[in-house]
Amino acid sequence: MNSAMLTVRTDKKIKAQAMKIASGLGFSLSTLVNAYLRNLVRTKRVHFADDVQLEPTPYLKRILRQSDKDRKNGKYVSFDTPEKAIAFLDSIAKK
Image (cartoon, rainbow, N blue to C red; front, side):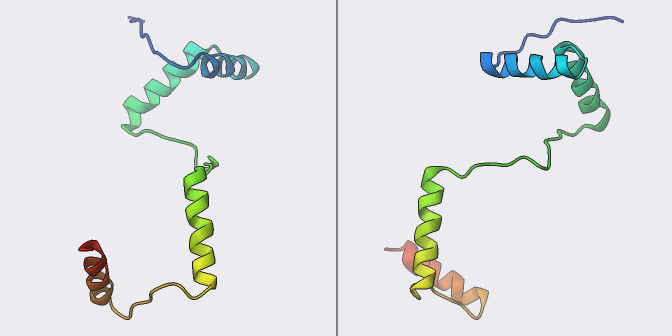
């Protein structure tokens, strides 16, 4: 195999965790990175796990709580047509 060196900068903790997981699965980190790169070349796609649990930011949590509170208190706007919604958004954007 004609090989080349690849240098990647990553967080030390991520590297340590990845090495531990790879070792536990019976692989070297290099083997897993090579497999990922081969898959990228073969499929021309980047794959991220579908079951990733993302945590909302504190800001998003606060805004969602406020939105839920407003909805429960009847403080929301409803539209019959997309045109009415766009007109409303245009009117508040001009303020």
